[in-house]
Length: 161
Ligand code: FES
Ligand code: FES
Image (cartoon, rainbow, N blue to C red):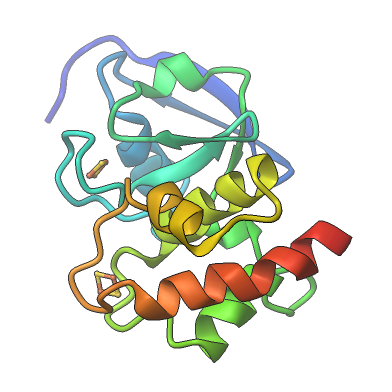
């Protein structure tokens, strides 16, 4: 049980205002999972290596294990729960499904948010650029082949939208 003083954190998550109280040293990933109940964001290494915890903070991919929740006060977050809209998968999620871009799914939330940010910056990437763009997220299952195909096939769809 942590007995530190609690700090108020207010932010927007997937378009909805959210708030919570936590100790100042609480990691953002733990705040998202434990206080906001959004367990789609995964925790792997907690050291900024694996990328599993990647979310969008003010539109840019960030490792939520390397941030404190209090640092995100006032920010807009997007987590994997915010990708599907109206019961329909996001085009990038559809592409991952179609091209077998996931197996166990542990890396998938971080991979999706990383790829989304990558395609925002580079909407028409080469295969090599995709490889480099997603290299910050470790996948133990797929060998990356399906992930790269999925990102490539989603690129023109997202460019149009
Ligand atoms: S849990 Fe954040 S990078 Fe691994
Ligand atoms: S699908 Fe299992 S770690 Fe990537």
